[in-house]
Length: 111
Image 1 (cartoon, rainbow, N blue to C red):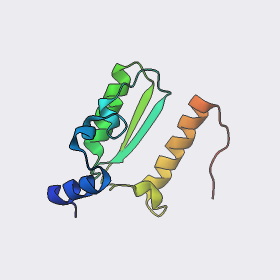
Image 2: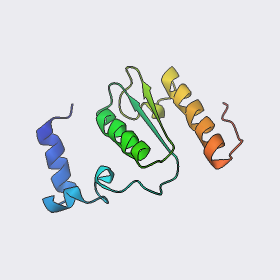
Image 3: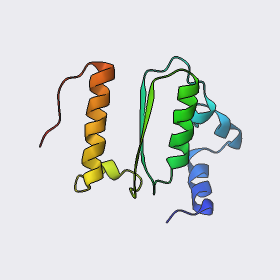
């Protein structure tokens, strides 16, 4: 669905100065993760940003940030938005547990 050419075209629509591609405001992976709060990354194995999520989690860990990376087998980008996927329900549960532990939220999700 997404080709390198198409992604470059999207990038040009978003940002007209290629120099800014290495700005942490555009690409957080080139920024400093020091001092960030605990981070939760979720991605599927069919996720186009899985490598970025993995790299960001590793960078946060190296900066001493509490981090968790949840990877869901066979799931695509934004699978969490499709409640019919059992993995989306697992992702929600993981998010609520993470928020409970790090933000003190005690509300659970149920529908």
